[in-house]
Image (cartoon, rainbow over the protein chains, first blue to last red):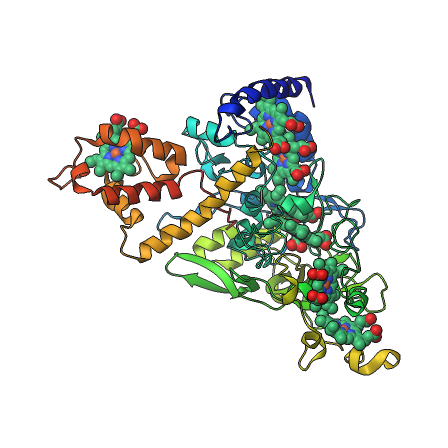
Length: 471
Length: 119
């Protein structure tokens, strides 16, 4: 805390005491801290230290230490330098407005989900970079932003109220620790639509019941995202299984640690012994995508024209109430990185992000996953995956230049020849725990047919039938 | 004072999705449809580039819309008539219809919540 912050805090305590007596509707937290909001610079006058801590976080840099990626070789990884099987890569897709033939906006770029105002994050800290941080997206209630074209070809994310200073001043003073709705601004619509990407981080969590989510239900304990995820100095806890960087490696997040439930929360011993090899989420999250359908497959080799929206897309398969698939996971993952030989799995597909672990690995447990499949380009003469510069494709439907352009941007290869390959990505499911009476029963796994593919998991057969000795 | 604030902010926030659900229901019934009424009665004079100023629900925050309907609507519009109409704007709308327009503006105001979609 600097001097200004201290003084401001004192002022608030004094004025606060007076106004609290009168106020029915308490003034927004920052009502007396500044007059007009003039961008992030306004916040920096008192919070430079917090801005500097945010600057180095995974949320801002989109790259960071990646100890959980077995093939990271010490590199700093994240969205900025990896690729995925949704919109593939921010390279060439960072920012800009692409319109259809009717002049309607189709896309604004990947920076829509970056907590910055439009500039690419730079590893070098500077005044310009600190002012590029969008504090309001995580801290102001009622904040919304939109992409605005400045003079020439440059773009900036601006509060939609940028022409209404009084409105903007009001919103920018409604400051608090992040609420669910603020985190969900990005996390619930990633991948191109409501719940497309993750499946278990739905917009419904903004306002829900205990029956839907025992942790976040407003009629229950009403936890915020940060109740579990807040770390320190703007680093968040919990990478899940398929992100590259680990923002806060020292403090992993898991249901079975002493701070939460411990590893033997049940009265029934049988359930507790299961928990040694079966992660809590497996029994406690029956299904995901319970409100909005999620993207289970994205085939970029088959393009689809949506006449109503005058827009081209990949061929996307959406599903609701999806049952997870189960696999071993020991806390680390293998990433398919750009410029590295594509690794094919047993089923022939390329594993984009795969959990590491096996029955024989004492650190591994069975986890619940969303299995996302896709078709993506790969170079013909080199065994490298190629992302897609998707933005223009949405308007013109031309896939070939979109792939060639990406090969040029990422590898410097002109006129690349590519072929389509099948891919798989395993995405851990961690949210949407329902009340205990909805947990899986013995027969959900040990019945016929059960949820577990025993052979694939490395068992000779159902371990309950086979018995301890003969497994 | 600091202890009550977050609660109040959250309470206000959670009303928004609820309010949206309520309007959608209202649309399905016989109640006046605020969105349609807005399009028919306001847009003609407040579209992009209009000389009377561009207004959509997203131009103002909820408090500003409430203030507008309470204090500014009548003085600013008492003499206006929709293009092609003979009855003055304010005489052509029932109080119930005007309430529906107000609700539409408030529910979709600049400080109502919406997730960022990336494509």
